Length: 332
Ligand SMILES: O=C[C@H](O)COP(=O)(O)O
Image (cartoon, rainbow, N blue to C red; front, side, top):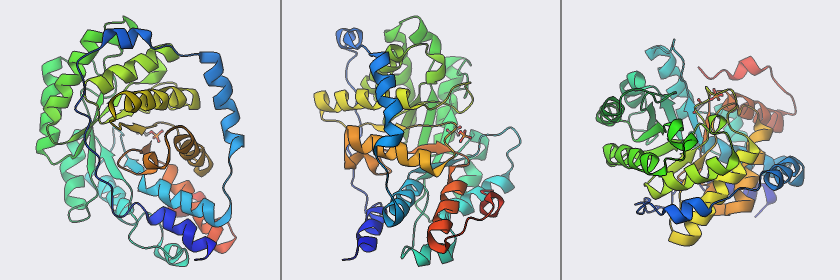
């Protein structure tokens, strides 16, 4: 088998998905939560060296980028979203890379991991993705601030599930973290998880608003104890969204949780990830810290509205040797 074949097999390994047991959660263990620390300067030092540590080139890079596409929650979360824009986004999710490029790469049948929209756009997205197997994710619970009354946040989840969302991206109440009220955070997350039913729940921590990496680590753990299927960094609307130090902190919390419980929880960095080279750094970090299993779309997603365009541009360069203008790979 040639190097190209091996590399591209890595990309197509998203096709038959391993079935992961959902995280059932645990009773809140406050002593475990309070024991969690984060050594900020060590985490920042390690994160700063990461972009230079691993570099994949040529066919391997193309394979990693194709894999990254399968992990994108292709997102539009704008006040001026329309059914037309969402349908165009869904068309892009079904065929994320131009057919001639895919053919040159020896690939077919690749899709994004999901499409992520506000509740009002769920029905349109579900209809547009009918028969593709691509799940629709709905942001929920008063996204992005999460400050509406609890019963309305729960009703919003239920409405989105009824409208056909397979995944619900909830926002936590940041004040519970900032005041150290872990019981309140746990109860809220548990209620959200219950309202989701069969739909998978991603807990958005809004890490840019949590103050310290120790808070990020503790909030990650509490959300996992309360049954989150994924923990996600940001809404994309905070002043600081996904970063490498936050990512290290959260994926180490996922690793600890797995070591203690045997349960794998997924990770979704979101907000401001728009370059193919950044996606490669995140993938390398997942591989280093958690292993290959966490590179599959059932355990790893990028929340991104414009990453796909840059990846497609890099793939075109790989195939043709030339860069095209970014607008040629418009998402919507
Ligand atoms: O969850 C997804 C984010 O809102 C997308 O953020 P972005 O537009 O910066 O890629």
